[in-house]
Amino acid sequence: MSLGRYDNAQWGKLLEPGLRKIFFDNYPEKSEQFNKVFNVNSSKKAKEYDLLLGGFAPWDNKTEKGSVTYQDPTGGHEITYTHNSFASGFKVTREMHDDEQYNVINKMPKALAHSGRTKVEVDAATVLNAGFDGVTRPIYDGKALFANDHVLKGGGTASNLVTGELNDANLKLAIKCMHDAPDETGNKIQYQPKYLIVPRAKEFVAREIVGSNQKTGTDFNDINTLKGALEVVVYDYLTNDDAWFVMDPAVAQLNFFWRVKPEFKHEEDFDTLEAKYRGYMRYSYGVSDFRGIVGSTGGAVTP
Image (cartoon, rainbow, N blue to C red; front, side):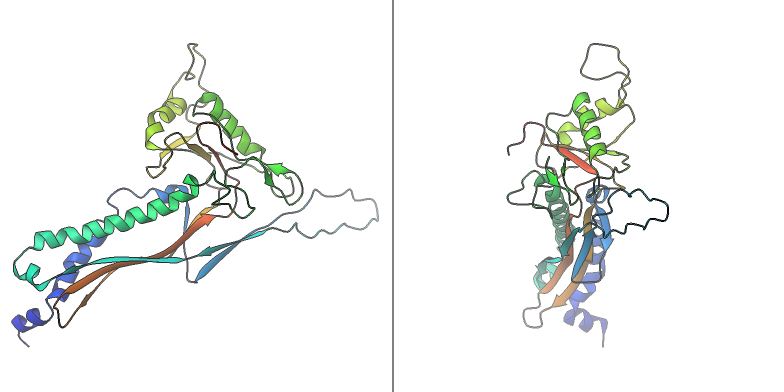
């Protein structure tokens, strides 16, 4: 078979290597952001399950020759992550190829990759964007992700919600709120807040609060006790320009599962001579525990 005939019969296939390279080389057009906030995992199953254990109550006093008191762990919560599939593509006609409009064709995989990349970021960010709405997007305990009344299995409640704008005083309240949240049986947890997550509109406010030598928002020369305490993470996909979050990534359980990472493939129609290229991916995301992250809408929260 001559090269000319091969090209005539399978021209779309010859384009695929170059277009594939463009697709993958341009996929992270804007630096990936959700992986800073989420635990990113791989999955080999249709669904992933996570179990939040309740833990044990404090130990009882043991008298001489007395029997050990045995406990069953407090019942926990099972969280299910169901993967969803996403796909899109474009077609290249034989005439586009023959007329040497390859520069136009080059733009298609880049645009396709960019739209897929945006889809992942927007979806993942809904965990925080809808995190104050317990009506339409409750988590495993029936509450919003950020609530002041998460019911504990061992009794009582815990909070990961603060109110008010991002400033020195409210940020300290958020850090305290995180440290006050116990496990399901009331045992204290060791937290180490690391990230201050903000929308682009609050980037410089956040950097001033945790980067200034003096305390911000006052006319006094007080030392800034928050200096260097947190790393500012600007999350461009937050939809509330006033919302902000404090996070301990070692404790927080915001999870993202890749079932199939983005792939790029080709097929050619024999009759129409259209070459079809498509991208495909499959993933799930959500939250398995309210602990380790505290949020504020930047103002009063409507019940």
